[in-house]
Image (cartoon, rainbow, N blue to C red; front, side, top):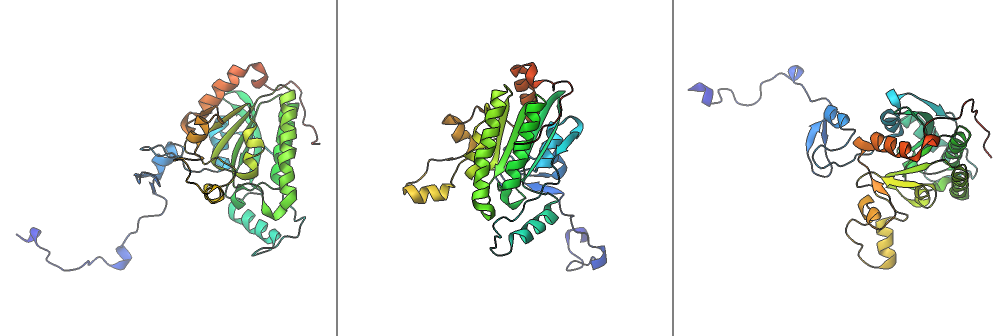
Length: 296
């Protein structure tokens, strides 16, 4: 019976008729290795349907997720970094900035904007790891400071979404000054009686953790996010001891009292709505006729 036997040996399909699977159709979870379609992965907001691993997403994705119908007004979109130290490593800093802007379509490592979250006014600053590892330079600090100013003037709550490797070495002391600058602005926001919610995502490290990321009225995080100051390898080499299992994960940080709660990305918009509603009318709508103020 010929259908049980190979009549012709080898593959005889002509090259021009062969079809390859297009890139970007499938997603393989880095944790549990489950394979799913990219359409399903996107529907689950880039989380694994099996183990709930949260993939990193960009600032634009957070804006689409949080703002009603994805509509928002971006603040300070055209701000670019300078080169105050004339820094050169493998390439000059201005060349690195130009190449990164071209590759990512971003002007720096944070985007800021304001809009409606389930009908509630909200100012959001979201860091983007694609831009030099989400590093904090002068533009990052200035854009966050101006976003806080906008929130103060318009009586709006402020949400900071942190994802960063820390201060940007190409700006040295200028980048470290942003820690004090943003912290001072948040103190003014607190004096104005306006809520500040800090969302820590994977990874949040370095000077960002040591400043605005941990100053929230509510500090929350995504599941499994790496949160810390120095990296685990550096700490282990410094103290000469093995670190606890899960050290610097969001769950470990929550257990030790540095977070208020961990929120699944699929529930983020609902949880933020409940939180802002609970905080009262200050967080619900802007002051009538409010105008933007100049940063100090």
